[in-house]
Image 1 (cartoon, rainbow, N blue to C red):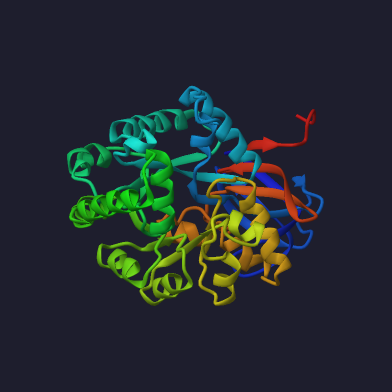
Image 2 (cartoon, rainbow, N blue to C red):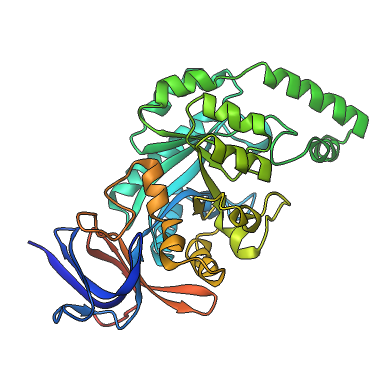
Length: 378
């Protein structure tokens, strides 16, 4: 039997926090004790001990593959360094966002996305932390029906989010797209407006949300990305979505809660004090208690920095930590992880508050130490 004892830690559970210790046996938490009753074990010297973060949306792999638009690096190399960085940031479960679409402007194809997903699946077998696929799936193309069976076969696929690529909708306005297309194509604004409207009308005639939901809803968690209007949320709920991911307006966030959807916002938005592109501020949504969880979006360190930000805003340690661990686990029905409770897998992070951010010192996955700053001690 493999047994680990951690003592003298500031432990955060789903409902309270206290000084104490815990016992891990065969990767599972078997005992949690307050105070200094555990005489043996590793002394954490008062460091915070929280469940490992569960990041439901990370763009980091893509940034590691393409650090510059014209610079590409091998997928397995990029995965290796993404994996290490996730561990160093206290993230024990990562959902890497991969765009499943046919988009000539962005050089994206379904076949490439499937290749990326299967590569991630293979690389994850020897990774430090857990890795799953978050499919940003375009429902407004007939091509999706051809590849849906192959997408369904991806074992690492646990989350599918409808990612509408109709230009001028949701995150970026129609006029923004007019300007972008006029510049990109070297045409006048009226010509760009006409070109864009024809494209929108053509794409709106195609909507395969129902087919996608019918094939995948028993296998994955379904969500909707960048909901802007109430109708976007209603459409998502009608097709079995349980998640509204980064809604861009307060009206959409409110409607998501009314519909019983989980609401996820980006941690960079929280840490920076607002959206980098002028959308809904996490702080505004939090004032109405509309936010259930945070994701790292494009910046791993902000997930735990976001926890520190919530503490500064007056949230209790349990409330703040649940936003990056227990709540994502509940939504994903991954009930064996996400909190420090007896019977749960021992995915743990020990850290020290360093001003406005969290300095991660040790990470355990199922009780096995995967990352540590204690250089030379072992």
